[in-house]
Length: 337
Image 1 (cartoon, helix red, strand yellow):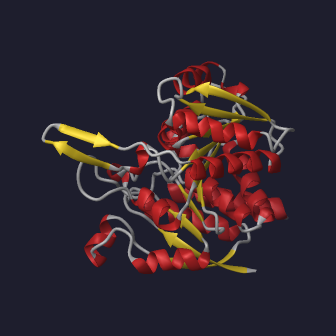
Image 2 (cartoon, rainbow, N blue to C red):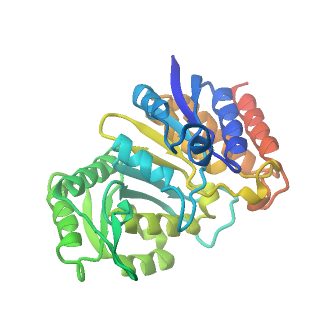
């Protein structure tokens, strides 16, 4: 089957890692027609907006997008393209599996957890305004509908993946109404999944326990802002943002799969960036497309290459972006012979 997939190469190192990932996915057996679009600053220059309507129309049509990193200005300029995509396409669930990869140096072993983050509301939605000069107000919106939806997503994912526990992370001891509503919804959904254990952690205590005993966690369910922070913390447990995938998923089957690290403009064009995070996101995309054989092939290729000496400099090697991708392709080819 040939899939039509929307491609956002991004900026900075985005085009380099995206090209490497497309090469590997196609070598694994993915048959795809790619519809490529600019977003962010490049799109503003060409179209006057960070998210041109043809791009959004393409994703609505294909229901699948692979997205390279896109620069977001800090403190000024346009709002995050990631946030814009989530709002425009109602991508309510952010899914980030975190696990140890072979021979990738980290402080911990045995980490195998999943972050499920609500993607559409909370403080991270950026609803803020100036009240008077020197006073800014940000709105933390939590709804029953969104909280119930993301809780159900977390439990259904746990059931499909045969995971044992869902932990809701909150600050309801202080924000008794907003975070209180979030955990109330989680508790209600938990009753429909009696085979899955359910517990709760206050967010600060959860962070402490994650850096002490990360192997004890399974599926973490969080509101938007805590989810953003804790998911990066968890990436740090296994080697950083360069080695973990992410998916943004919507109710109508739309999925946008991305690397969550930055665009690294300081190394752009040097062919030294690690494509692994986007490649692992590509594996999530393959499974979304029911291309499980290709996904398994990529994972075996990655495991084989990481067991050897070919790796990019951020994970202890000297290989270039393209050399690393070529090595995975060779490993997959050898695997099929």
